[in-house]
Image 1: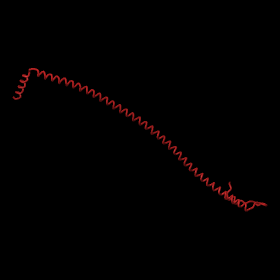
Image 2 (image 1 turned 90 degrees about the vertical axis):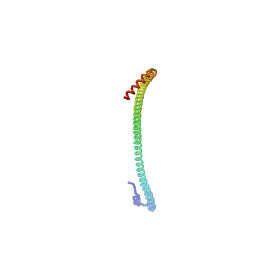
Image 3 (image 1 turned 90 degrees about the horizontal axis):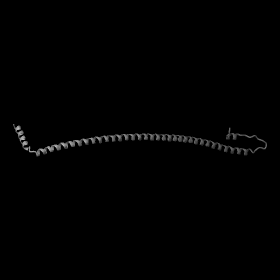
Image 4 (image 1 turned 180 degrees about the vertical axis):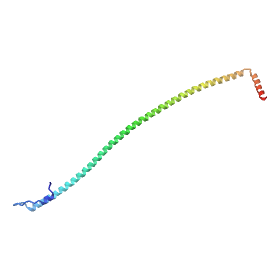
Amino acid sequence: MPLTPLDIHNKEFNRGFRGYDEDEVNEFLDQVIKDYELVIREKKELETRVHELTERLSHFANIEDTLNKSILIAQEAAEEVKRNAGKEAKLIVKEAEKNADRIINESLSKSRKIAIDIEELKKQSKVFRTRFRMLVEAQLEMLNADDWDHLMEYEMKLEEQKVE
């Protein structure tokens, strides 16, 4: 066990023949006691300071660990977000391709229907023109024929029948 200032103070030396000067020894011991007390105080202060710094170091080590864990979690979350965004982008592209295919198929179907309708209208137009031409030709034949007199007689007979 180390000496304390009190141990030094209470130390008594045996007196011998022609021993040391008692006052000189006491002054020296007083000086040793003061210096020893100063060293002990400094030691305690340093131990306290070391303890405080150790606690702070431990605190900062905990903060560092927490930050490292947070960084890892953030990196994992970023990777997850990136993967999800990639999946979502693929789904959007697939959906867009499906919509594009559907629109193209609908457009092709409509264009075919319109082409069929145009052909039908062309046929109807041709039939209409043919009938109209035949009607006009028949009318021209009637005009060119001398049957006007018969037609006039026929009309008069019709009027007479109406009157009766």
